[in-house]
Image 1 (cartoon, rainbow, N blue to C red):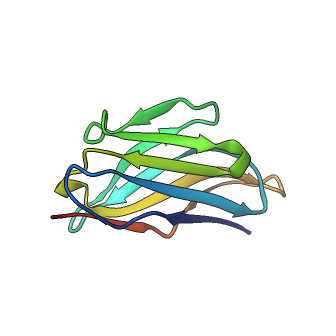
Image 2: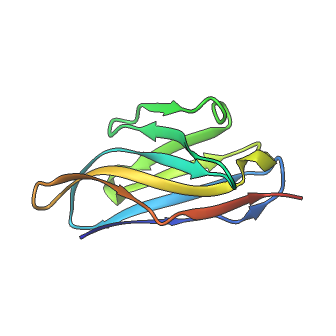
Length: 120
């Protein structure tokens, strides 16, 4: 069984910074792409960004230049460093990962979500 567990969401003031973490655990053999989505209140889920195993990144237009995704392959963990936060960044943030488990089965996994609120 594979699990993704996120942490780091909290209330932060506009202009502030926050770092989210997402760790994969369980029967993980290898992890390919990892990344983040978010769902703002009353809106559809939106892609935030993706990082490949080698560290190449891509970002959605709304966060480009403000958010940075990184990963630690030894810890099976992906991070989302958010800066210059705006109220419109308020959302539940979900991590995802393309994982091959110990049985050789490839599947996409999702975290449970962590709430980020940007407000004064």
